[in-house]
Length: 105
Image (cartoon, rainbow, N blue to C red; front, top):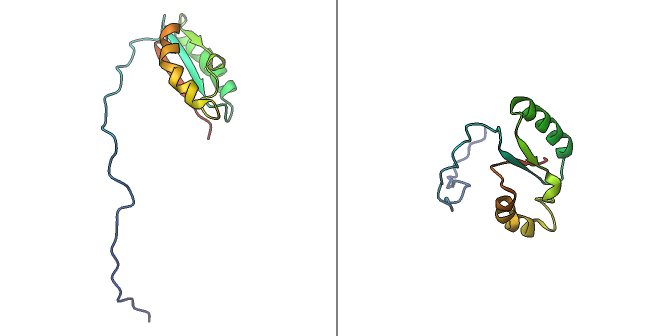
């Protein structure tokens, strides 16, 4: 029979929290008449997923408007820092009320 008499320290593998938790933005009451921007990292099948989302949301909210992911470029890759840093100003210019951010796995 094997016995192990050694004692080892056990440590928690996570670091201390680096950021404060912040409240999320309030939800919109409706998407009717709102402008929704689509962000995508160009992985998986976001082009197809956004087609389905647009169709389904238009059925439920007929006056919803979309700003296509094509308008923004990939949120992942060589240009991601520039694209992400320009997002707030671009969204404001386009009158964006909500965002759908799609990521491929």
